[in-house]
Image 1: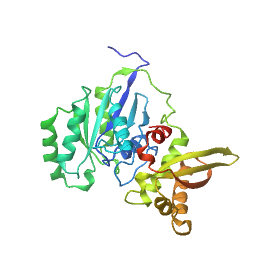
Image 2: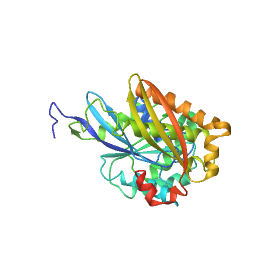
Image 3: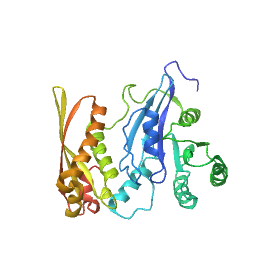
Image 4: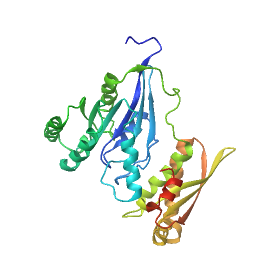
Amino acid sequence: MTPSSQDIKTGIVALVGPPNVGKSTLLNTLLGQKISIVSNKPQTTRNRIMGIVNDDNYQIVFLDTPGIHEADSPLNIEMVKIAMGSLADVQAIAFMIDVTHRLPEELTAVQKVLRKTDKPILLIINKIDKVGKEALLPILQTYEKIFPFTAMLPISALKSDGCNLVIEELLKVLPYGERIFPEDIPTDVSERFIVSEMIREKIFRQTHQEVPYSTAVVIDMFQEQPKQVLIHATIMVERSTQKGIIIGKKGTMLARIGKQARLDIEELLGTKVILKLWVKVVKDWTRKMTSLRELGF
C-alpha cells in the first residue's frame, strides 16, 4: 500500500523479557523523560506502562511490561498475566535480555514468549557496557539458533548506546497509518499513577529483602494549589515489622523516602510539592485477590 501524505510509520510494540534486564530504563531513554520506575532489584515494574515516542515521520507506542518469570504468589501471577496479555494487540515485540545473565534461564523465558506469537520480534541485548565485545558473539550465535529474530541489537539503555537502532529496526516492520495518540502525550498513565510509582521506587531503593515486594502506594490526595501541589499517600505493607522498617528509627527512613520521591515528583510536575506519607498494615495483601483488584491488577 502506498502511504498517503498524512500516513506515518506507527504501531504498538511490547517491551518484554525476564525481570531486571532494563526494559524501563530503555523506555525512559527513548522517551527522554522518566515515566517508568527503575531499581537494581528484579520485578520492580508491576503494571503495563505505555510510553509514546513521537517524531514527524513516526509514532511508536511502547508497552513496558513486568518481567516474565516463574510466578507463585497471586501478585506475581497477575504480573506475568499482564506481560503475556500485552502481546495480543501489538504490531511488534522487543524482547530484551541482560548480557550479564546466565543464558539457560533466559532461553526458557524466550521460548515461552516466542511460542505464543507470530509477530516480528527484535532481540535487544542490553547492558553491553558491562562486558567486553568478545562476550557478545557467542550470545548472538546462541539466540540465532533458537529463533529467526527480525534483528539482534546490542545496546546499553543506561548509556543510550545503540538505542537509536531500536527505533530504526522497528520502523522497518511497522505499518503506515495515522497517529494513535496526539503528539504531545508521552504516556497514557495519569500523573497520580506516576507519582505513586516514584514513591514505590524509593522504597525499592532504600529497603531490602521482602520489604519492597510487600509494599504498594495509594495516592489519597492530589490537590493542585497556587504555586504548589499537595500530595498525601499511604504506603501499604503486609506486617507490622515491615511498617517499622519503612518508618525507621525516629521516622528517618520514611523521611528519606519522602525527600527523594518529592524531588522526582517536583521535576515531573514542574512545581513545588508538599508530600506527606503514611504507612498502613494490610495483612497479606499480595495474596488477596480483593486487595489486588482494588490496586488495579
